[in-house]
Length: 182
Image (cartoon, rainbow, N blue to C red; front, side, top):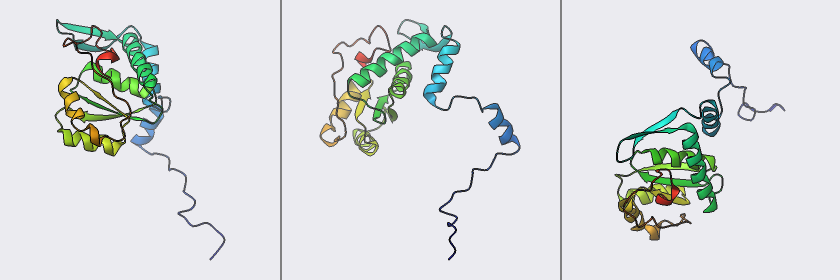
């Protein structure tokens, strides 16, 4: 045996891309490295342009990047105030909607990890995902999803935070309000 390290002990440097990959790597070399940095750069670049269009019950409404960022930061602050720390997993049980996206961004801004769960999943499937992810929080879309999660609450050992949804049957005036979600 010689005194040199084995190949497994000293990883070789990452090879440089060639051809089309090299061109793409060169084009993307100044891109933000994280989703949060990408979001912040986009908000800074065009805060007054529409980020999302969503139906508010009476018609389609545009939400600017600045409005979306303010809502996501409010959600992030709410999550942190409920005990979220960087690296904590947060499950979202919801249909696709603008609030889902804002919550996702809020989780990322707070340093959390988003764990999506299909709204069509059974209570047992939701339980498995929550437990497997080690989620600290579960955020639900509506009373039906809440009841589904609560039916398995005795098995959700990692969930440390629970709050009640507003008893009002009408959605909050601002769709990004965390009060209707957490």
